[in-house]
Image (cartoon, rainbow, N blue to C red):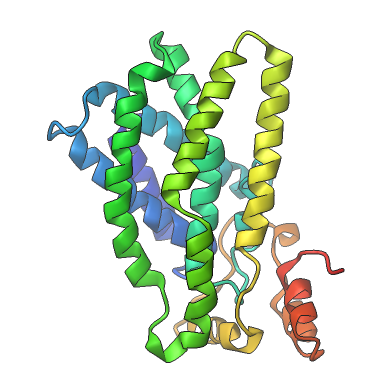
Length: 276
């Protein structure tokens, strides 16, 4: 797969999903990033453009496999399950969907993609490290634009404050640094299949756990539920193609939980996370 084919596939996914769908939110962000990286491949930004183009394609392939698994009614990797399971939740802000997708793709998929690339090209991680870190500059440019687009305006300050705290607790730069540490660990373990498998499984699970935390509703349910009503008025459904019944949280069930007047307890029930 080439980077142009990746862009085409991301556009196909975007066209097939409702705008409010959580996977669609991340997909739009990912498409923007991929187009930015593609444009930089031709302007001398990277020391080894062919290697970065190949990495981009290998990297994207892991997200596309998760999308395909969900579309076939199968479970995606654990790191992706929170996003796919809560994609239609009306109490989760679009910014949270974007963060959860980046969390899964960067902290799990990226280190595996870098190791795959090095094996395919017969090189060491150190050979691609410089360009790996140069991508941070591209991401920083895109992130600032996306943040402005997704953060609530001043009329919803009660929503903006918890989201601002969330942004302060998770960053692309820190995630990519963590991913590079995972690359180094996986590379050292490459001759030990059992250890590699155990490390990869633990990484998948821990990233998925963080994904659940990123998607916990942060604002009063009644305020967030307005997004669903707006979508219905515009003829859109929050249920996306390929979302299985087991992966969706029924809207009626969420409203019932919110109607108990239990505050935080209602948010926990509606999020699909266990209560105390």
